[in-house]
Length: 343
Image 1: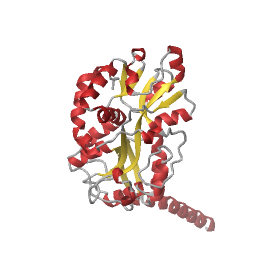
Image 2: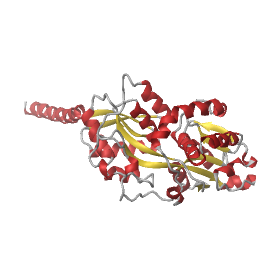
Image 3: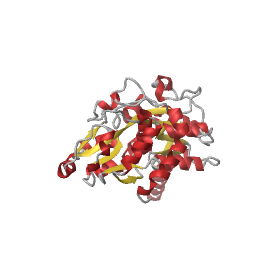
């Protein structure tokens, strides 16, 4: 009889231990978070946020910037995301213009760089970091093919680069869009379209990912991949035979940013995650991957960033570019989509 009581007690204790985590899990708020962050960033970002913000669980939905933006707009009447964490500010300004963002100023957001946060009060988005156009130049392939080192964007028009340049499609990739926005910013729109038309002759393929061109160049498939700083630096640090070139006639850049979607059913939890996204702890996390951070005074820890990135950024009017985004993308597709990779 005593043994039966002990067994029953043990079962009850065991069931209690099982029930406790289950009850705790039920109390957590599941946030659907849309993002264009790199895949390797998802796990550490989720882990850090869930540890810092008790009671939330992040469910990522990830795709390239253009795809994610189109999805958000398509879901406008019935939003499925609670929050965007890690999407181009060009996209967020477009959503802002469609009244899709929830006004909220996260705690501490006033300390962010003025050009890396919403000018509205309350704010509608907050910056995380900046990502920048970069040229991944495979020095081994270049030597084999006798290709010169490009120092300017114009150098890529050299006929010797025919079929050796890969670039992201700006309709699906935020990197592709910031690259052409940079050309428009430095050359003016008419000259930029002329430049893109001439560069098109040397393009082998337009990819649907901003990382893919640098990955291609790092593997030696092509000599030149037009990509962005984080992917370029990561691959070079891993030993890829690439040189990171920052064209001395200026490079385009974009901001990764955070925003709450209007209509979220989890507003309190979304606000707490937005608070974390601008915190020093979050900025230190972004600094593992990017050198240009939204919060002054946070020292990035990523290695291998060329100093030229900060010195060669073009002057960007994010609101104006966002207002012209759809028109620019339509024209680009009409002119150049024939060389895009299959979806």
